[in-house]
Length: 521
Ligand SMILES: C=C(OP(=O)(O)O)C(=O)O
Image (cartoon, rainbow, N blue to C red; front, top):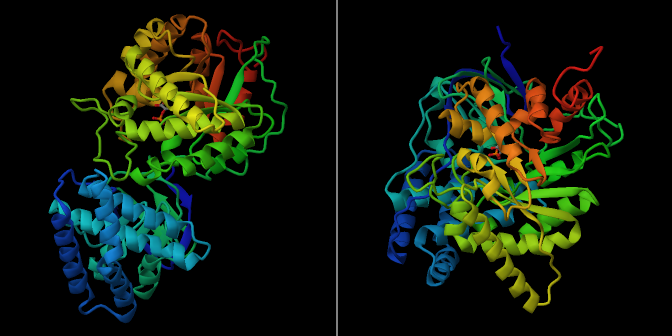
C-alpha cells in the first residue's frame, strides 16, 4: 500500500486541520464584452459586495477591505482601463491587463509588505470579472481544506470557519493578508507547497505547526519552480554513453527561469523551457522587454550549451490569465500553435523577444501542439516579418532554428511531411493523452497502460524523422522503466526534470543502445 505523500511547506498559521480538499479553480475570464458603462457597473457592484463584507468584520479585516474599496474608487484605474479599451481591447482584456500591470508592480516590490498587497488587487480583479460575467465567486464547503495557488482575502472573509478547515497554498506568502487573517482566526494554513495534484474531496491534512501538507496515497507533487531537490548534486563530466559506447545527450526541462541554476557541467543543455510558466497573463504576453530579460538570463547562464525555448503552449492544463479557459480538446482545437496563429499579437511579441534574445546564446525555438506542416510555415513567416521589422530598428537579433513538439498523434504519424521543422521533440504527456483518450490532469488516468502504444508510435515516427535532430522531453523520458523502449526506438537525446537526471543517467550507463541490459548489470 503506497504511503501518504508529505510535502514540505511554510507555516503561515499554526494548528492542524484535516478535511476534504476543495480545489480552487483559477478564475475564468468572462467572454462577455460590454462597454465602459459595463465596467463602471461591475465596479459599483463589487464595491457594494465589499461594503457588505466589511459590515461586522473586525478591525484587521476592515483595513484590507477599505484598501480594496479605495483602489476600486481610484479613478486612475478605470481611466487606464478606458484608455486600453480605446486601443481596441475589449473590456475584459483591458481590465485584466490594467490590473495585471498593477499586480506585477507590487510583486516586483522590494518590501514584503508591498508584495503581499498583490493578492488584494488580484482579489478585486477577480471580483470585478465575476461582476462583469454575472457570476460572483462561490463559497466552498465549510470544514474543507482550501487548496489553490493563492487565496483572495475576501474569499477568506466570506467563508464560515467555525466548522474547521484549513488552507494549503501552492504559492502564497506568510506575510500576506490571508495569512494574517488566518492567524487572527486560528485557521491552520501553510504556503509554498509547490503545485500538487489531488482530487476534489480527497482527505488532506494541513500541519501549520510543522509546515507541511499531507495527501492521501496517490497525491502527487508536480515539479514546479525551485523544486529540484538539493540532492541533485551530480558532478560527473557531461560525457554520457550507453554501456556499448553510444553517445547520449541528457538535458533538463525547466519551468521557471531560476531552474537554469540546476544546469551543472554534467548537463547537455536545456531540452525544453516551458515559457508559459514565465508568461502567465495577457499583460506578460504583451511585455516584450520582460520576456527578453527572462530568455536572456536563461541563455547567458547556459553559455555555449543549447537551449530550446518553447513558445507559449496555452490551453488545456496551461491557461493564460485573461484568456478564456481552453479545454484540452474542443471543436476548434484552439490551443498551442493554433492559438498563437489565431492571436498573432501574442505570438509577435514573443517572436520579437526570442529573436532579440537569440544573440545571447544557442537558442532554438520550439512550437507547441503542431498538427500540420503549414502551421510551422506560417510561424516561420511571422518570425521573418518580425526580424525584418527589428532590422529596421537596427536592434541586434538572430533567426534561431525553429522545431516542433511531437505531441499530436497526427503529426507523429506524418513526421516525414514536416520538411520545414528544424528538429523534433516528443511530448509524451500530451501524446499519451491524445492517443489514449485519457486526460493528463486526471490523477486516476493510468498513463502506463498506454505506454506500449506510445512507444510504438515513437519508434515509427523516429524512422520518419529524416535524420533531423530528435529528442524526447515528455515525462516518459524521466522514467527509467521506459528507457529500454525509448533507446530501442532510436532516441539518443533525453530531456528530463532536473530531479530525474541522476536516475536517468545511471540507467543509461547500464543499458546498451538497443535497450538491452548490459552484461553484468
Ligand atoms: C513535454 C510536454 O509538454 P507539457 O508537459 O509542457 O505539455 C509533453 O506534453 O510531454
